[in-house]
Amino acid sequence: MKTYARIVNNTVVELFSTDGNMVEMFHPDLQWADITDVTPAPQIDWNANFGTLGWVFEAPRVAAPNNTLTTLAKKWLGGVVRQP
Image (cartoon, rainbow, N blue to C red):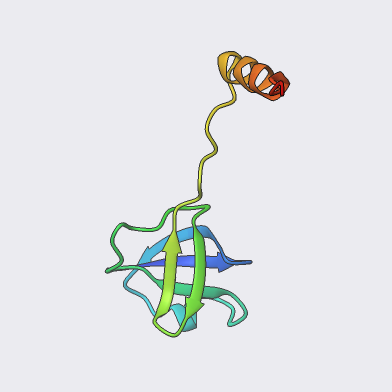
């Protein structure tokens, strides 16, 4: 069985596993990439770019949480002015 990722605007939007022929199963305007042997396996919302080496997948970057302590530290550090 093969696993495919459907790509829309350079983003994985769907995962699909089948033994069938993708060309016969889906409209030709849909863009599918064979990810059967890709490690780590791409997931929904991963970035997908096609280049000279084929498809390259990357997990989305997660921003650090902006908790209260971080916010206060940024305000304090932003307000510190060096005196001559």
